[in-house]
Length: 424
Image (cartoon, rainbow, N blue to C red; front, side):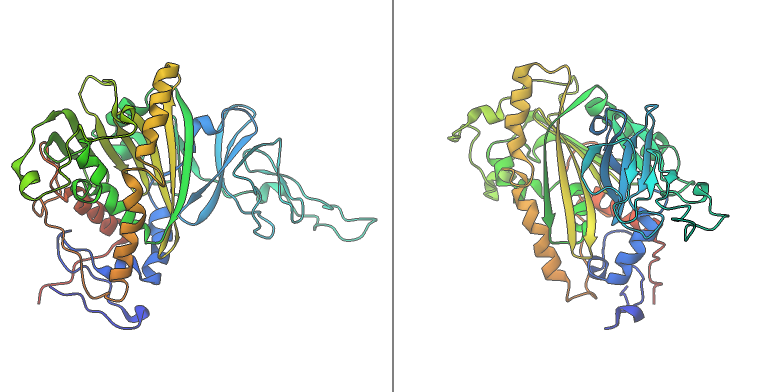
């Protein structure tokens, strides 16, 4: 099967090259029309978007700026303790209302014309509503109840705040499903504290990063530190768990159950021993935190959330499209309120493994740009994703597979309504 393409994106035939999800056409990473449709069908559609953490807004009057796709959003803590999310766009002229990343306020006031909103987004006051000296002002039928900041539905799960524009989006725990929710509770199901944050701009389409997070077998090849110091290798005991629809996934490994495979030596895959000289050997020291023995996990929630656990470093990654070939990536490094000072220090030290300049994740900041550059002028070509087979299914043992990447594209196509081209 082939996909019919044209030079003009407006004339492009948006069909998938195969009936399954073993291919992704390269136009999906660089076509501006598809990018615009994603803003509506995905980010304004029936998905839950991660907004921020509950610990980001602990007190009444706290707010936090966020985004859903390219849409600016404000998350507030009301006087009654309620959590609200609204589009950060004044109902008058459309200006941003909140200009800081976070703050504590009594009211939300637009600097342009001083339209004033309550913490739930309802309009409370308009400057010169009654005019001045009998002149001007709003019409007599103007009612503040008819003008407010656009609301999002909000739900919380394990300290995370999610928002959606759709009334049809199922409850968050249903959206996550029975395979995903318990693992989030494993990692985040106790009081959290923020240890630090990173953010960076990466020069690639957002879906390339979504693929990267689900690609469990590139870590052995791209991330030399992982393999050289035996933090995460494919010859460790591990597997891949997919949600029912394949949209979300968990990739996991158990460091203590490494059985070194001859494939590593034969292929000369970063074969430095664990005893290699490391100036800070404490970086790799860890304590057993969970009974399941899992020492490395990557969990993705469609469309743009990742929860990671490496040794004892716990972090949330979330990313947002900024243009068809630009993505903003954010990292929140976490600990637990119950941690001892020594445990907190160990988590902080291990945070150097990941983040914008992490010893492990540094390469991801550029590799997806290489894909963007390599594919943007070849929209008629497609990627090839048959590692581990062609199915979209969990893999209880083994991570040399692209099953989770195929799962992402299965979910993406369902939401976007992109059908496979009929066989000739």
